[in-house]
Amino acid sequence: MSANKQQLLKRHRKRKRVILLVLLVALLLTALWAWWLPPVLALVLWVAHEAWFSDHLFYVPGSDYQYDLQASERHALHGLGGVLALPKDCQLDGNETLLLRVNLRAGWLGRLLDPAVRIEGGVADCQTFERGVRGVRYLNLGGQAEALGAGRLRLSGRHCRVAPEMELLVLRHTDYLAGSLMVIAPHADDAELAAFAAYAQAKSSWIVTLTAGEIENAYYRETFGLDLVEAARLKGELRSWDSIAVPRWAGVPSQQCVQLGYFCMQLPAMQAEPETPVASREADLADTRPFRRFNEVALRSDADGRPTWHNMVQDLRELIERARPATIVMPHPTLDPHPDHVCAHDALQQALQGASWQPQNLLLYANHLHDNDRWPMGDAGTGVPLPPFFDAGLPMRPWVLGVGEQQQRQKAIALGMMHDLQPAAPFKRRVRRFLQRCLAGRRWPAFGDNEFFRKAVRRHELLWVGTVIDKREPR
Image 1 (cartoon, rainbow, N blue to C red):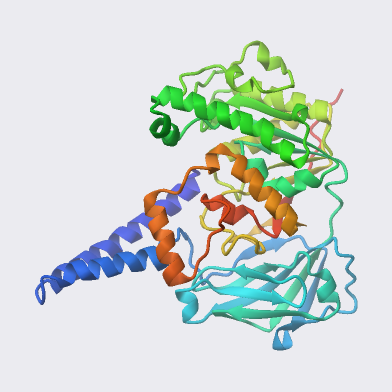
Image 2: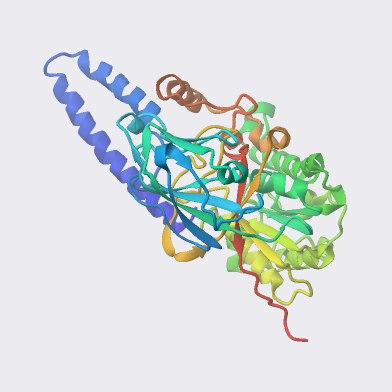
């Protein structure tokens, strides 16, 4: 976890402890009137917390999102009666990324139920925002170009009001899928969560997974009666197999899927001492080769299997020079705070230094956020608005890929093959979901229990365009 997210989490927990202390004092005072009142009130407060106040939101929902979006064109729109008409000087061909800057204000129900904006007249969609939302947000109009051009696109707020003054942002992009694509995944399933549709549609794709993902293996200890080391090794082998086998569902040849076998949550330690081998926390291994046994690609570091930063950077450089990708997809260093994801970005940047091949494009993804663990909010199958962001000094250029219903099913099935996403949700989470379904109207998909099935199986894949700097050393 990044230092920024640790700080946000500490502040959130401190505020929660203060609220709980005040409630505890209030409950004790109610006992002066009736002995049975405190337990009844405690149960009611617990149910209310689970149903309405358990989201991990580390910012004020009344804050404006602050972006410096590098749009090709901007057009002021006035949504009279919720109907949008495209300005005559704006020409669309359906391949642009279209965003709509709107101002939302939650109604009183929008503090208890999820506020959302319905999009009708084109491809029916519903994009959900934080309870109590008030301020600037960005709708994703991916797939709505035809309806927008015909003047039949309509917006309506659910538990919120949409101000009529809006701004259309048009971002024109090159075709990132016309050439070969390489996805850098810190863990098995990161490539599928972020870019399954992208790598399934690209002319040619490579999937490179950095770690075996062997830690947090309680499920295997409990299910098979294994000790910590045995469970870690089994989980690492299963996820290594997933990283090679699952991309084949999208047509990626197995010889273009590579598992590097480094150890989960150890990349920061490797980066701190680049030449020092860093062993697994739980698998009692200091050799990457056991988790590389499904690879059909040989690497120079197979000779010693040392889990060092130097070897991992060299592996990435070697694969880039072999695959010669036109586009590389990797974690976003600012939006995604997971330490292994940050290190994956750093390792790739280092690998590009001195490499004989440089990609034309970089695309960045965020499978985790600093300040909203629920994003994308709303139901599976709906659109993906821009995430919360509050740094207008950082230029950002989003790219949206539409994901049709059939490809959403294919993505859901691919995620279902991932062993780490298969275990049932813990009992506490199942109780919370039951209460939220009954009291807050939330729904979860039937095809998977893990929260990522709701977050990732959507109408859009949202990626961010990075800057490519030629870092080849002069010859």
